[in-house]
Image (tube, rainbow, N blue to C red):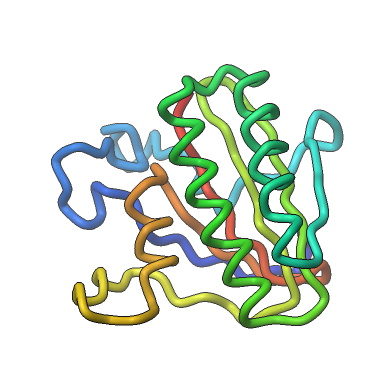
Length: 166
């Protein structure tokens, strides 16, 4: 995305959770890997699916599952990816107009997925809402089940980019 803004949030390491690897993979600063938001979408090899209405979410989950399994994401991690994409797509349908689309691709050792819509930039880095809260868990869930989360804004809209290690 040319001329885009990028914001990165949500690695478990950033939140201090012991069960997440840091986004940098423990590398020293000079060897730092690109953040999820700095990665470019490959010119080929990405699968894309659009969604417009709530009844599209079931097909979207099937698309994400098949594409992720085909790229080597283990079944347990595929379930986490489907949960994250489902939460993001539901937010799109509840809070924006025009639907959205999902783009998924893999690079050595990692899988990327963009959920793109015309909504505003999302705020990540929030705590899980209290148990009695009616709303507000979707983005917090996404941050907790993905290895890294970034938000990019550009000509094609707002993309929440998630990464899971293969």
